[in-house]
Length: 435
Image (cartoon, rainbow, N blue to C red; front, side, top):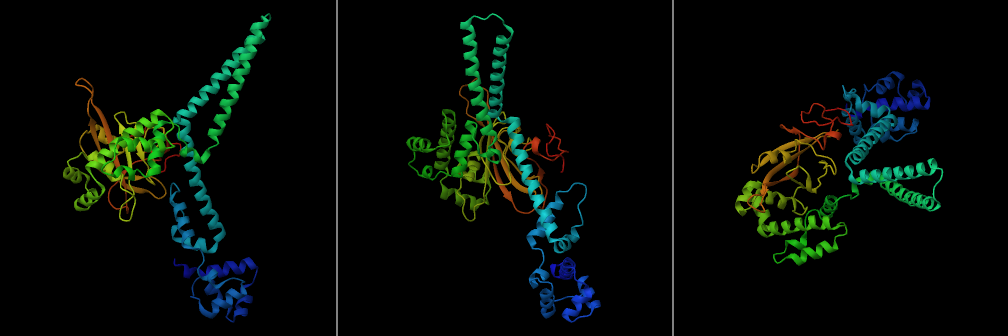
């Protein structure tokens, strides 16, 4: 129903809210009560002087009566309805509801947004509580310290005759353990109080490298120059504040060395020209440059964001499925601690080494988003003749406009994916099945 057709409903609601009789309002604006009744039931169009007169008598602005609820509020109510399981409310009357009960409509929309925000927090906290190594180590340290204090206290309480020297030693140990417990508990509380900022915290070398990559957008202008070398990489690593230990530096160094190699084989200008000539087909680009498809996928992810260049995400994992490099993309969440969705083309590529895979996937949610994922698994060079092959899979992620055509339903990880009917599910979802 167009919003202009709801003007009568808003006039009626405003009149009733003021406690005014229909006949009195009709007399004040110079129309019959019967005609005003038709207006209030949206059976007569209204505008011009009559609308202005009614607005004046109802102490309202004319636009407040004629325009009513904004498009954003109506859209928010539609999104809230889409999240309801087992049937939605009367979507054909959503504008009428928003127009007649704007306050309640705003409350419903606000609550729907709040529920969605809380679900995101639950996802984050669940991911942390289940897989966060820092949290697990902190809890283990607290429990170990409590056990040590309890054991020492039991000895002091149950032993009647203790040598003064041993007694002093036990008491000193208890004091040291109590100080250690206090320090551990304080650190744990600080970590947990990070709350919504938990996802920004770095708790592993891979996290450090991910923060390093995200800060640069996986585009390192200094390394695009032809004469760049090991010294330039060392300077960049020394300036990186997110790389806190040797493990993170080693991972970042390995990544940057590969970045330089890719940049030398596929300079930016030549890469853009090749992508334009091939329609963005990584396989044809790889054939033109004489490089592996995985190198093209990495290079496409490194293109700087600019007009005409779509935002791209990148994920790299080893043969065990452990993610070793990630460049996040909005709408495609990448788990930090737990295993990701086994249906991702990234993992399908591990089962078919050397075979490129392209698949449109759809992430669940109130507004499902689609992405084109292109992945390939390439064996890394062996260190010796008898060394087992080591495979590495690379996946490029690009947003897809529209919802036409088939798409593979995937998720971030089983624990926070609502697709109950998924045959690849490993554990129940904490969000409950909705898809």
